[in-house]
Length: 314
Image (cartoon, rainbow, N blue to C red; front, side):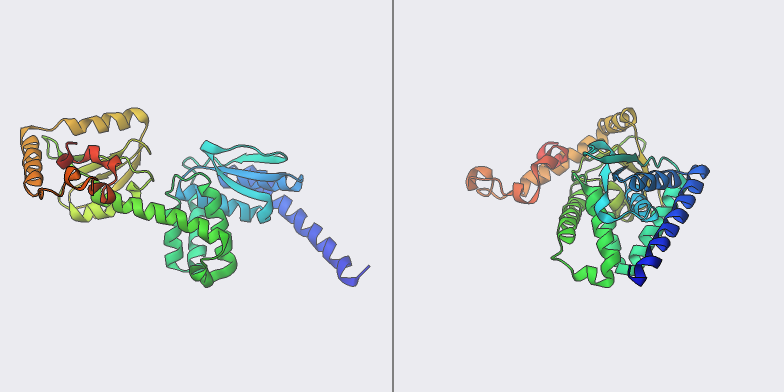
């Protein structure tokens, strides 16, 4: 037997024994991260592949990636799936990563994010936040593979546009960035009698937490709320606050808040009527849909947003 083999195998077994001991101790303490790490390690030790189920949030995805590293999982034996689309494969064990309000999840997510930012740069780290807001099927696994690629390549990751992991990731970032711009452009507020501004907006991606600061800067002295019933999230702003509070909602609360957009007073209805009249007065004859044969507005304003625009009869 080669000399190297006689020392490598005992070292591997010793590392494995130490890892087993650490995961057993971790599981005993009971945090979400420690329980998930112990389960993943035990499944891998038993010869199975593992699917780690996580929520569609930045914290949950990053923490789940951290769990795969803590469990010393080889990339080809572990994958991440969103909880709402988990389907077990043959020979695979599902590990549910229930984060809840566990502080260990946030701490591990910060650790992964900080390490990735130091390794790959601020721009790549910000792109990870954008990608985690995507509703795309398979988003957690795409982010997982991109993070592993980044920890391997370091600063070269920013210029790597040919790797399959980078291409799939770039598509997520592009879609979310585009939807963030749509959110900034097409949110319309209605003023309630108490002075609060309310808007209901349903983007294709979970963009409200990403654009709250934009509205806080534009409407710094106003109280407002933007509700996204599709993602069950809302942003709230109080006068003079520099940022918005992001709040998760249940379906009943989201429906109640969304219904408030119709509680406008006579003054708000007059303002909307004036805006509609101005919009029609600025229209150029012959350049409408009838004159052109097609509606040019559809190229710049997706029709899925038209119902919320007062100028288009929303």
